[in-house]
Image: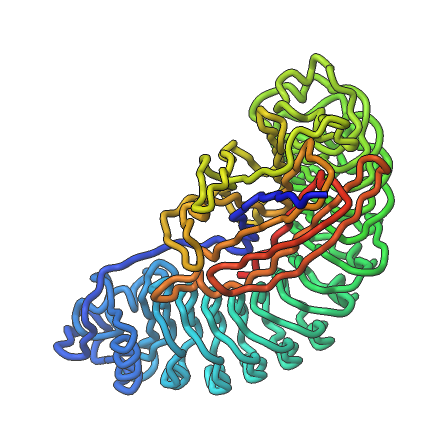
Amino acid sequence: MNKKKLIPSCNLALLNYLVSISIISGSFQLLQVTQAQPTLTPTNVSTDPSEAAILNKMFERWGISAASSWNISGELCSGAAIDSTLLQTMSPGIKCDCNSNRTCHITGLRVYDLDVIGAIPDELWNLTFIDDLDLRVNFFTGPISPAIGRLNQMKYLALGNNALSGPLPSEIGSLNQLISLGLGLNNFSGPLPSSFGNLTKLTQIFIASMGLTGTIPSTFADLRSLGILQASDNALTGRIPDFIGNMELRVLRLQGNAFEGPIPASFSNLTTIEELMVSDLSNGSSSLDFLLNLKSLNRLVLRNNNISGSIPSNIGEYRNLTQLDLSFNNLTGSIPESLLNMSSLVHLFLGSNKLVGPLPAQRSTSLHTIDLSYNELSGGFPSWVSQNNMNLNLVANNFTMGDPNSSNLPRGLNCIQRNFPCNRGSPIYSSFAIKCGGAQIRSSDQILYETDNETLGPANFYMTSTSRWAVSNVGLPTDATNPLYKSVSFGQYGNTNDSELFQSARLSAGSLRYYGLGLENGNYTLNLQFAEGLIQDPPLYESTGRRMFDVYIQVCNSSISLCNKERYHMWTCSNFLFKSLLHDKGNINVITCKYIAQD
């Protein structure tokens, strides 16, 4: 038997939008502490000279200075620094308190999205009057100094979207005036300090995507004022503590960790929660019983948690629900008619379960995204499936084809139902290559990569006119208002003679599947080609992410209905990763690529 090549060359990426980022630029002026104009400051007061020296030294080192609305007189605590201008509208910017004696103290500092590179200066920790510090969206590196404990008046601390590393200092736990703590999207290591339990005034904590390990400390039970807890995309382990169900949370995000199930029964006490996102629980079976009284929910994501049972029959009573994602679980039974009739619901993801029965007869006009792929649904199609302006994914079910109502569905749905009926017994080819997200191109080794630029959204599929292959996408980025599902660049990539291959990509927030249809039986080599598109020189905060590729290959022998699934874990921070896999004795009917970005 000859060895044949299957080459879906895919420059693929997953967007796990955990935050919404604004880009702000500003004009610059050199800071001065001379030629003060008293008319712009309270009478007979001036900035503490030691604080002024520290600020000027840091800004000089960073190569930044003030916009015209601040420091126009040369006196730091003047203009926007002391008037009603909000600190959140300035970058760079400071706020001052001039009410003590004749000296103004710097109480707020914002250096947001200014591409500052390097360690946080030690001098900063001597600005002990600061109660609001925002250094987000830069490229600060190195550890946070234990000297941060000196800033004991701190109320708002935001250090997210940088490249900070090392363990979290326990001294942060001594900042007992903290109301808001943001450390996410960094490269820290180690566990959460138990001292964080001393921050009893915290109302919100953002610790997502920052490299945390270990369990959630038991001392967090004392954070009774917490309304927002975001800790997704780390490597936190153990059971989700029961005490979280006793908090007055409005937002809870615990996606993409290494927690063990089940979902705590105490979550039934979260009666004020509006946004609940928990995913990827291992071991332990959960149910949806805890949802009974959580009627304030507007976003519910419980993906991949080994949830069994049926969808609650009273789901229609959740009148604020706009997004529901119960995909990748073990749900059984039928889809309640009331679910698709909810006037508030916009996005529905029920893919990869064991749901049976027909599609509901009616659909609310507000429901724009419906993923029902990889279930055991059957029957014909109601009239609503032919309506436009809707993202609908119905692949890998048992629907009856030829229904007049299915005329507006994308072609090829019949070929990517559960039994993959097309081309059986008449294989038509033994190799193919795909230019993911882009136009056809021939590589330097003369492989022709087929066009793959069909528009896909959060729940769509597409099959080529030749019926050789198909693609399916599912997933909605967490916080993106206008998500992208393709990316185009003109960058040049190392370790390859074919940079153009990597200048377009499919983007997915959940699951991106490619299907080879009608392949001959034989031995195949599958080449997946990846390029890192976020490493920049000079480095920016976008360059800090780690990448994990979860690649599932399903190899099916159609003659005996046998499928073997193999999973490969690949970590890379390099510019180019090439992985070659060899399979024998099988026809590769389904290629599934699932990606998790850790930014």
